[in-house]
Image (cartoon, rainbow, N blue to C red; front, side):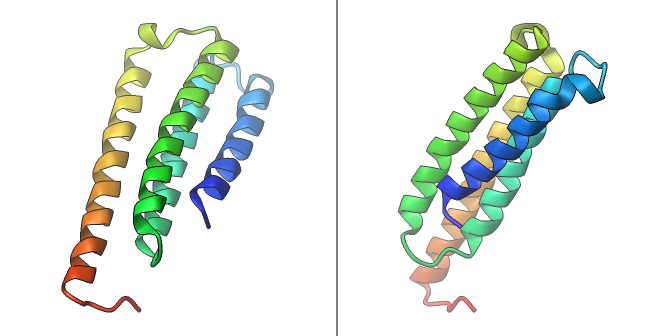
Length: 126
């Protein structure tokens, strides 16, 4: 599954929940909860699939990072727009988004480094 397909799947699912969140919850922060959950799901799915990519790893890595930044920005904008709550006023969600971003880059870098070392030492992936 390419990073584009992953991003499309995550965005579509997250958008459905973002656009309907006001109907099934009265919590004013529900849009931020959904947006950060979408970011976390992309993080998990992308890193997991990346470990099994055998060809064009650098292209996958770069494209994944670009799409993560784009998804994060889009979801933050939509959550802010739909909820009316500014991210600058929400310490918890600012911190959570920063933690998700840091974890994404660390997890992706570790996966990339592990795969590179496996190739350098000639370890076969099964």
